[in-house]
Length: 241
Image 1 (tube, rainbow, N blue to C red):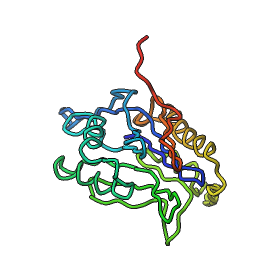
Image 2: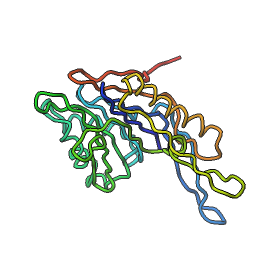
Image 3: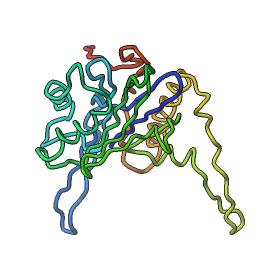
């Protein structure tokens, strides 16, 4: 699992993700199968800049046939993406490449970028579900472009923080209403800060909870602005101590 956060605000689009690769397997025992889960790596790449014009984030199954998905992203880019490819073509290209030939793995993507429409740069953010062979544009509804956020993967911590909840008060359930976030007024820096907050808070919450530690490691953050190449705000680098 992972946590990928995508924000689309008036100044640009932000996509961010953690770096943990979680390994899961079962072994037979006298009482059935025993489930195992460990943090296999904290240097896994989940955020990608594609052809210096699109941003891509992946979560769900992090490997295909035992091979990390990052290598397949490179192959996908080389085989499917040209200088003329538009952001609207990206979801279908992802479905075609990662679908039937790999058995439609439970891998998901966010892909972001801009189209020139009527002489204006228009933001596009898509969610792509390979297993179900579907995609949808998450920043567009009822004929209008929306400012907001979308996230996938290990979403429980963040959902609890910003959703309506009910507390048991003397055997009566009292609702604490959701406090709205003014996405329309977010600056690009605000969006970067929110992405960092969302992933960092999830990492720290999982640290103390008695559950799988499926989000961790460095946070990578990529920004897409109109008429500019993608900007890496944070990106882990190869290193040797």
